[in-house]
Amino acid sequence: YFRSVFMGIFDQSSRSTFTFFSSRLMISVKMPDIRISIAILQYLAQKCSVADHWFPADLQQRARVSEYLSWQHLNLRLHCSKVTIFIYDFCWQGMYPFVMGSEVPKEKMDAAMEDMKQSLDLLEEKFLQNKQFIIGSKISLADLVAIVEMMRPLAVGVDVFKDRPKLLAWRDRVKKELGEKLFDQAHEAVLNPSDMQQKMPNNSEMQKFKSALSRYFR
Image (cartoon, rainbow, N blue to C red; front, top):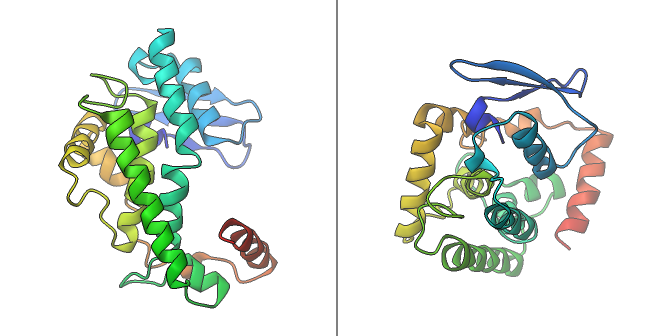
C-alpha cells in the first residue's frame, strides 16, 4: 500500500515495474519476481532510498518494524479481514454470503469480532503503547501496513477506532504524515464497496475463490 506515500502504480502489463508518483518525483523501479506485499514494501523502501524512518537502517529500530510486520499477518490483518468479509453492511452483503450463498453463522461472526478486539488490544498495549507511532516518534512501514488493515472494517460499518482514543489519535497522526488528500484517495475504494459485487466474476474463477474462502473460514 505504498501508494499512500508515493501514489504507487503497479504496471500490471509487465509485472516488473513499479512507478511512483509524488508532487516532485516520478521514478520507475524494475521489480524482481516478488508477490508478497510486505516483501515488496521492504524491497522498495531500500531500493528507492526513501526516508530512513520508513525502514530504519538502525538494526534495533528495523527489528521493531519487522516484529510488527511478522505479527500482523496472522493477527490484525487476518482478523480485520474476517470481520470485513462477514459483516452485513447497508450497501451490500459481506463477501462471505455473496460468494458462499448463505449467511455467516452467528458463532463465527462473534468469534471474528472477539479476535479482532484482541488484536486491537495488542496493537495498543504492546506495539503502540504511549508512543507517537508504532516504533517511536516517527512513522514507519509498520504504521502504514497497520492503518490499511484497520480501515477495512470501516467499509462494512465497523468503526475499530470507536472508544479507542489512543488508536484514534494515532490514526490522525498517520493521516497527517501521509497527507489527508493522499490518505483519502488511497482508501476511497475501501470505503465505497457498493459496486464490488458487480465487478466480481461469475465464472470458474468465482468457484476457485469460493473454495479458498471455505478453507480460510472453516
